Image 1 (cartoon, helix red, strand yellow):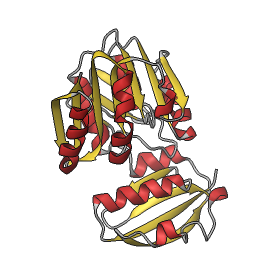
Image 2 (cartoon, rainbow, N blue to C red; image 1 turned 60 degrees about the horizontal axis):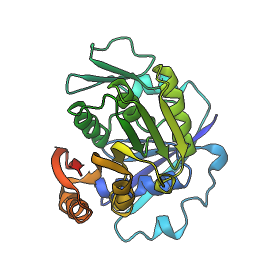
Image 3 (tube, one colour; image 1 turned 45 degrees about the horizontal axis):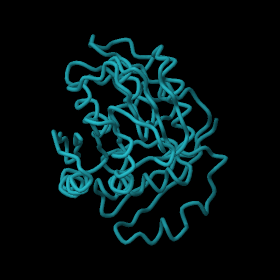
Length: 278
């Protein structure tokens, strides 16, 4: 498949601006992002790109930041090779969980080894929030439990939950590319107890879980938290990330109003993950 690379220069250039722009670009069809020190690269199938794509009011009149961009078509190529040479290095988290690609040959041993096929993917594990979620999961007992992974992305958290002994895992994402990649990576890791569904929190309905993992975005978490709480079993645990440390009081206030108790939090480069219990 041929891709178009959109290189964006932001003003001001900060984490919030980048997150908001990536969210909008993802909604427009971009499948992958690379964050460089000076700019942000977004990749979209060339069949979905046209010169008017970024000229809408949503992109051009954002009150929080401005950006300029350059778009260039990239011929079809071996994307695994591109990632291997430029972006995706084996990632060892807490000396316990290794995330690597099939093409990696030099990597340390770990108690949990997750293989992720990049394929122009979100979710190689390098984002701070994924790191924090994995750190929280490594401290938890998941054996025999029913686990939900909201916003599953490439399926890393679902796969780790299965490897840690979860009875079964439900993985949900609004993006079809993500659900397909989760299925692919589950098979790659020989994990067969993950149910993958396309959609959002409306799919939960009468479902009940011992543990809910939600690595999404602050406003979505606040919006969907009542649904998560209804889906928790007694003494269930909700672990969330996708927000900044400065947002923890707002997240905690909402959780407290819903009857949850903060039992742990984790910080990394201004990002935060929090664990709540019934």
